[in-house]
Length: 409
Image (tube, rainbow, N blue to C red; front, side):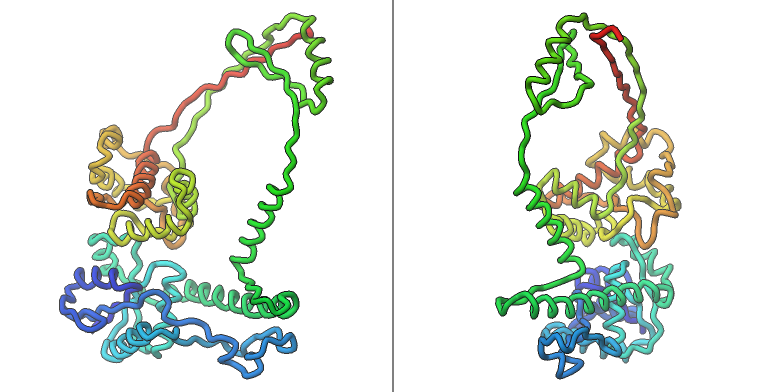
């Protein structure tokens, strides 16, 4: 019996359907030689200082820094989590092999590994590693299961990050609270939150202390073209007027005209950060809003895995692009011109050296349903148009620079 553990119930349901585990039980599916269960996000966390030492229960500078001799994990104090973990623990004892079906990323690996460690799992572990939730991707993933040990370094990285967060957060928060809070609350310090807060505060202070400055520039309108003076901006109006009066005494002569052609390549495909920035500019979505919407699109099989940090596709994906474009029926007026000829294989799009865990966010070719919420449509449309544009030819433009002179130099 093989036990598949997904990261959330909705994914578990899809995997169960694909592998033929059609019998629904309490907290899992069963059938066709498979058990399929799930977590729902983080089940385990690192133990708090209070769990290690009675001395660490007190917020006292005398006991800083707090560095446990060995970091340990515990279950989150939640009745639902504890019930589902008990189910997983029981299933692990029944199975012959565990298939880690967590999200294919550092956080997904950490979540699943901590659960397996807490359950004292000693069964062989395989890893399902997929970038899309389509039936084809899941089926192909099960045909190409990896050894769980192949992702030991990814787990080590996630574990190290969690420990680093603990060391900084627990120690620095107590240090700053005891020294500077004056009993008015906790001063929370974190690896991400503190630098982010500093950026916000610094930017706020720049805006608060910004002082506008009046300046003057010299321009002229000649044959419906605005010419800008190569002189500096003038902070003293009289200086600008003086030079203007000098210029009026001379004829304006065109001395050169230079035309340069420029190629503008399509914008890169989206990684998560790029998509969040674009959706903020276009729709005023927060980063969390965009992440929430694209996660829903991923679970609905409409786009590939969202938590990525690359804008490239693997080279072996090139043959699949034409099929994806053909399946994007709502965008036929944009894709038809591409499908009439071979899809170009540009290094600006396909590059194995620029990919680690996952490739850029792209549509899967699954057609969006008509009743999709407008916010999800907006995110999907943004991804779809950027994907299609990536295979269009470069845009050729021309820039003309004209110089004029009034001094006869």
